[in-house]
Image 1 (cartoon, rainbow, N blue to C red):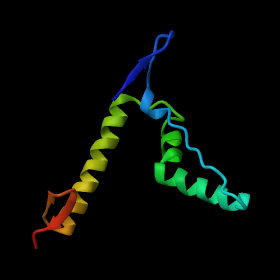
Image 2 (tube, rainbow, N blue to C red):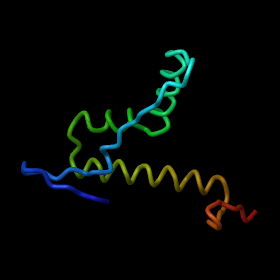
Image 3 (cartoon, one colour):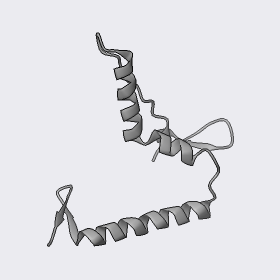
Amino acid sequence: MDFQTNNTNYVTNTQEKRVLTISIRKNEPVEKAIRRLKKRVDREGVLKIVRQKAYYEKPSEKRIRKQKAARRNAVRIRRMGTFRFQNNEFKSER
């Protein structure tokens, strides 16, 4: 992760400063371009990040949230059966 220091007393994460852009194609209606932008925003998870950062989250709350997510993922993987990660794909050993 790249970090950048500003003249102020805090450090910002440079990876979070990505800008989503779409270009309107020739003879494309604006509504269709807006629909493409909405899909890209959903795929990138921008709204989720904005909602998380709307309020301060204590480090202990962040740790607990991540532990709960890890437990949910472990249960889901266990429920699907045993898997091994090979060639960037999950392959079942059933």
